[in-house]
Length: 126
Image: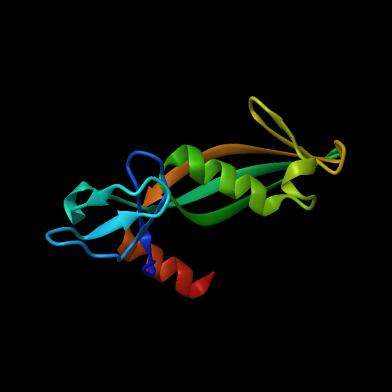
């Protein structure tokens, strides 16, 4: 088993790519055992996600920078990052997630893809 290459994901199953090198290949998916050339892999990108937080009569917004395979995954990770309860205790709805038995509700307002260069600057100050 090789070391996981954190910035690459399998285009078939989104599994982690390891640096287990076979002749002519860049890496191998640890989930489905597919072998890949570097050009075949999806590189995870950064997304700046704006989350609206509802707590009773109060409402506020939070921005978070996440690294994910897709905007959909970035949204889920941003919502999970705001939640207090364990992921299995959350109530997922079409437009967001209820936390702590409905005490909080989180929903994604928008997200913006961020270049790796810009993400480096943001990560430096977040």
